[in-house]
Image (cartoon, rainbow, N blue to C red; front, side, top):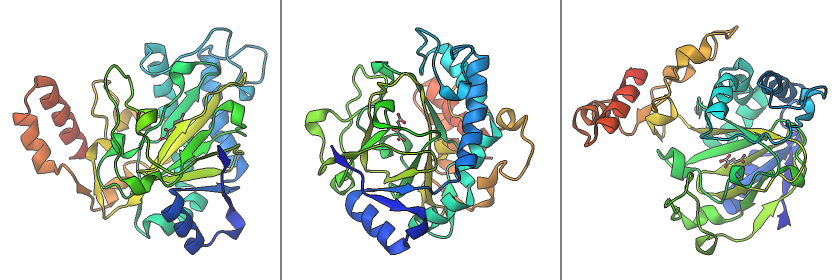
Length: 312
Ligand SMILES: O=C(O)CCC(=O)C(=O)O
């Protein structure tokens, strides 16, 4: 694996950033986010992990040392419960809106950049193979217009043994690649079917961000350290491009809602912020209303109804 080519936030030019993403499919930017801003999200998250008894008592939660034998992930019910508390944190949603990050994403997605409202938090326990995310393209999961970007933000220094992301450079140029689904909890691209140039990787520090195109193949390295690896990933796009409405709402049966998410927030500023954009949804609201009546299975009809009720 080759070492990432890195930019420094203070010496970044839009032209160089765009050219690198265009040719390699990714950009690593050092020191883009203030360490304090990143750390405050980590403080909030590790406080919840500690309260859930996931971390060894008597050690600073920021060290992220799991209790012996603990290793939870989706779809474990205990994982879902704690993840929900993390998802409800105001700081978890504020970090992606930090002005330094927004300014960089404007360079890539244009002035009307839309920050997808559902960041994903990764709580990766050490030495647990089933929690390692294998090679995939984010377009497989997000759909909509493929011209969007993911930003991966480690919330602490992330040496290679803690399992940061790896990138298959140039893979975005091969279009959408076939993901295997059979018997897999999460679809992935089989190793012998991967198309791209070379894998790049390396350590990241708190404050760094790794940006990649929706069609860039990436995978996590295994976490071989003794600490949990905690990171956020968020999608950004030009608000004028099509958007899959599932990326705005809670389509599943979990009972999650934005009202519940916002219940303990101090500020109203980011609540439902995407409703201020004249978004082009695909499927459109009209199409979703129709699918809520005509889709084949009752569960699909219920899912479409939930989406309709939340975008109205
Ligand atoms: O952080 C991880 O383990 C996986 C992240 C990922 O696949 C993504 O950001 O799309």
